[in-house]
Picture 1 (cartoon, rainbow, N blue to C red):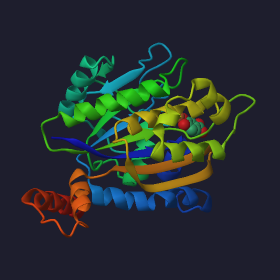
Picture 2: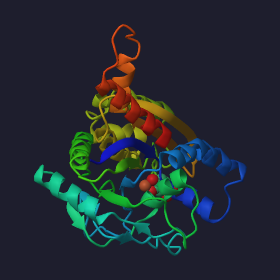
Picture 3: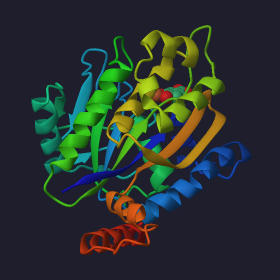
Length: 318
Ligand code: DHB
Ligand code: FE
């Protein structure tokens, strides 16, 4: 059985990709941003997921204002980087996982979430920047460390989906993954945000208090976040702050209680607040083992021993 082991939230500021591609990561301005992801890259190297589901938004790269699916699932075998005006980013083609993607499409659509199925699509900074932040810089002739199931969400043209709808879609994705027969360890990314506004009189808006509160609740009390209406995101986090609803798909795909493994927040990158969080599901085997460990009086049963052994293997695997 496949399972989601952790969720990752990350901003996708395009200037971060440009800094990486133009070898500016050691400049003090950019070092402040990239150094916040060093521990995460180490965590990712140890975790070695088999697949990543990346929830992101397309910025009129593969879609356009003429055609905007609310939720679009990438079922193709590969997703080339899009040309966003300066030529495609020098990153590897993203390899898909058509079998898992098709399984998710079937499970989620039969659960009444009407996804658009995409058998051909290019991916822009919304996906490639968070992947670089978590997997590091990878030569375009090489490979990303794991295949990806992309889920593109409309947050560029009104009306985007509600936070509640996003969270419930995450729940349906969790169910879909858990009914996939192969033993895959899956991570899910929620990307975009945090507070930012790119144009108009409020361009440059950043609201750190709102952002930090969002991260706190994402970790401990997501039920509070799913009630936030669009207008509050717009007012408090700026017009493009609405990208944050995508983090709720990631959170919905995790267990109710999670461990916050890591968090990073810095302002600004370009004119955007950069937020990042890693939330891990508590391992069921570990939980069973821990619950029975202090009870010295009770004899450890074979079932508990097997659970403890499974938990140990999980920890060694990272
Ligand atoms: C910018 C663009 C984005 O898509 C985003 O999420 C943040 C910043 C920008 O153009 O600076
Ligand atoms: Fe964006």
